[in-house]
Length: 286
Image 1 (spheres, one colour):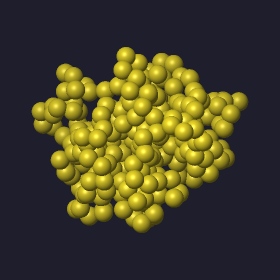
Image 2 (image 1 turned 60 degrees about the vertical axis):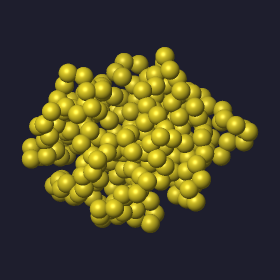
Image 3 (image 1 turned 180 degrees about the vertical axis):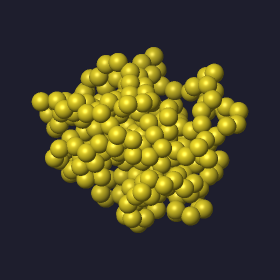
Image 4 (image 1 turned 90 degrees about the vertical axis):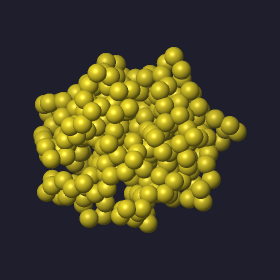
């Protein structure tokens, strides 16, 4: 049975961090005619309970403490779309402008794979063995279904996993690391395949969830029980599916339509909404 839930506001980007300058190239390309104060993405909790976020158009990395207080941790010349932390404490960034980056949590950002290898990176997840799975969306869509999925091993070797996705976006692994979920945003679907696929070149891929309305799925998050939470971009809602693909929860936001990303912290689901610069929170049943 599907639960219908309205999310609660947990925290909001403070006014002091609202950008009020002229639209830059990223804003002009993705939101023509608009001015954005921010565009928040890529949540990650560190071991101290702080929530890290990136601001795509303005190259900002924010840290939000357990009380919901914001600080600007770092700003650089980039377009970061996601941030995740490795087991050694360092962070990995997917950056549309600069490629796959490593950030030491202070001021040092280094390049793991340069942007000229990709169409334009989107999201990432890190496996228990520190493999980095990430998506390369560029401006792909149903009219140009050539988006990519890559995997980088800890030794730096890069593997091209998929090359036929209409805007690959969010990516997540099942709790045991055996399954990979990819948001094919412009197909309005979530795809699924085996992480250690036996096929000689490309893995066999199937549609796990077929959605409708909105723009399509954006960020993905997997609970320890295997449930998959999906941010439904430009629809102001989140869906949660069980391991069979059945809908177990629909979460509506009271304000804002640009749901970009989400993350579980035990049974709490934190939802990032970019239009209003909000972080929403719901507590789900086990």
